[in-house]
Image (cartoon, rainbow, N blue to C red; front, side):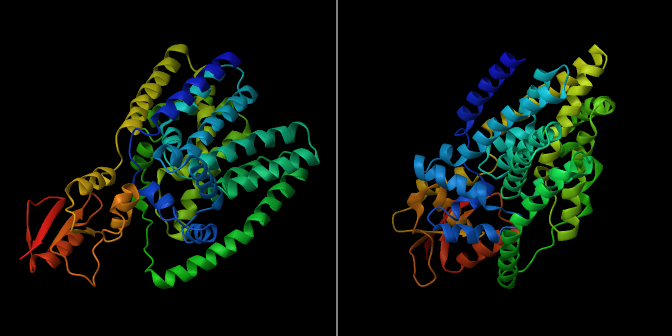
Length: 424
């Protein structure tokens, strides 16, 4: 198993690192890094505070790596990729600890899981949170085996690291408390970790309250976001077949599992949805990422428990559908911002300015193509030519408002997402 795991992780590492630059950064990645590219650390922390559910560690790690390697798509995504690779190492250790057979299969299931693989390739916070969640599970099991202050300190540090990476990791810690083993050490460790996070939480709530005075709050949550069909499609990140296959295998393995896996799956699944309801935040599949280690371990148990033919069929369905989804995630751009930025540079006359809908997207294009910095249209100047730009995020109302504001004074050239207007 050790050699198989080492080979699998080595191949995974090469594949992930090789894939980091295949697609341009997309909206969520630009929003995470782009707004803080030239900011100071205090300005960076302020930006993190006004983002709902954000914690500082991934932003600081990303900034540190880019400061060392320089700005590039590869450097921006590298911290997330490294955390995913290390998550695979820790998950392999959990497979050794919790599985009697099929350990290599469990590791492969985890690595190809589309929801996990997606955040290996995106410059987001989730793979770092997943890494700390997995480390906390491994340390909790060590603490149960050998109760001591030393293991409790390490365990509490892992829980705190998870909170400071992605707050939804708190549900993994709650599952460990619900497991009920060795509460003499686990409860104080989790309690101190939560207390260490409170100063950041308080400052963040204050910053968001001030921000809400300037920006109209939007209600996001709807029960339609968590219908059974939506959850079946989104749970694994790979669509209906992928999710159905892993759920069948997990159901078969449920009777063989430890109580810890039950609690982790249940609480890490229900907790984020409940938080969305309470805080009126929209549901997204990434919020269930921290339930996936338990689900995959249960599925690996199901593979070894199921009749061989049944196990092979569902395993094949999962791996094939997951591999197809992973390939698309690695090679297909998630939006048209990168392509649009390239087109702007190619079509922008020397004396023209750029006007976008939504207006804030001009900053995203400038981030993706720095030569566009300073080319946004200013209200205090008149221009002979204006390049009007829309993209896949532009609503019909925004597009109509943009074009309507130009037609009275400018004559349009070839119409499309990028249209050059010349003053009449």
